[in-house]
Image (cartoon, rainbow, N blue to C red):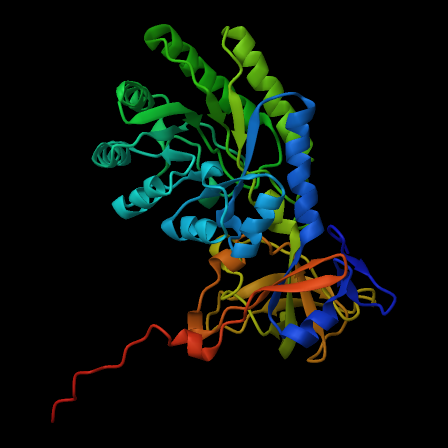
Length: 440
């Protein structure tokens, strides 16, 4: 059993997180329930920031809120002095509702609407990461209409393929994101940004993928980008103020994963940027990064009540829980793997291997295949680790299942930050059929 953050087994033999007995959480809030270890989130945030401070580099560490976005989470990000990435009008609205400092908000996305860009300009957010020529033109038109000037970065694809799942690769040439760095698209966008009276081109952004366990991809991306930066400096006398190398720093889900410390990612990125700036005689740009999963992923644990059992002789034993792909779609989406224990008796001896099934009416609703556990039954609570990223944020109402609540735990205190959805919530936006049935 690998315990993350403040998790431990207390004197009652129960799993405890943030000084709170998980069975007490279940007693008060029911199951399923997402539990976040706030101390671990703070530790990770400070780890990223302190490395930049130690090496004396101007930087912004922006939390990629798509990983997990709620009012309380955004407020926690502000407490830790981070910037914030948003990728939709809804995420931007959440940030504004949380009263996050607008100057530290960066707006991403490959298909921002006119309304979303107008919203960003109206609230004078810090930076818009422009993804394509359509957006570049639309943003310039909006700025002209509103008589404002917007800070922008241009997202580029440097042609780097990180070692990760195909669905979470984003920096390779064949990607839906960004201006291609090699075929002249990025250079054309730079020229537009440079000469616009309504756009302030701060620099370049790239993101090479997610769940990355080495620094090679980031280093190669920096080298490719600097080659272009040098060309643009020599050709157009343009020098970037900001270089954003994205996020994607991996975490440990199972013993198959071998992440490196956050400080190592940051330190090697800084050293490479400094070296490239030295080689080409450039001023070291401000470095931005965008950790999301690496801040919240292993800080989250989902608690489920064990339900039905199905035994297929000589094949497999299934153990069902009261959640599934409605609260964690990652296993169905891209075969994500997790570890889990019985929260009420995590130290009991393993007696069997079971596969954890969700309750959705879908054969693909499987949370964990072949999990070693003590013999489990309906009195047990299953704790699935590392569900803090893309669990709640991808939660859905498939089969009309209400979304679970979210609680934060820290220093022995538990705080409800998202209420459990009710059945009434499920039909809140439904409208009745007003057309009368025709006589047959």
